[in-house]
Image (tube, rainbow, N blue to C red):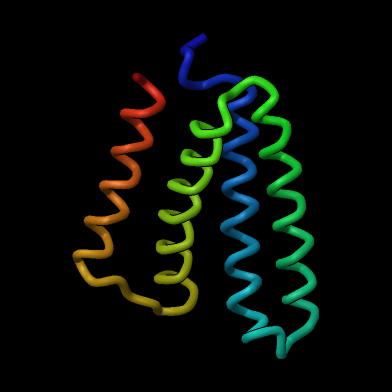
Length: 109
């Protein structure tokens, strides 16, 4: 099995995906004006950190957290654009690309 894709890294990816959904729910809550969406966001963040905790049993915290963050940043930017018509300037996308590149270098180093 490729060293980059392990069960533990799978936990990181799933945790990041859950975090992205939590971010979308948080946006839908409109500053917790819609309590159901806000509570959903909190529950999903708790689940995301639980999954991340499983990952750090076998992956260094720095690698797991940076990977989780990079996936979450990209996914949240894409989700915000698709669901809420939020737009990043090109410099924002360049920044996201740099973060992802840094995580890939860190993971393979």
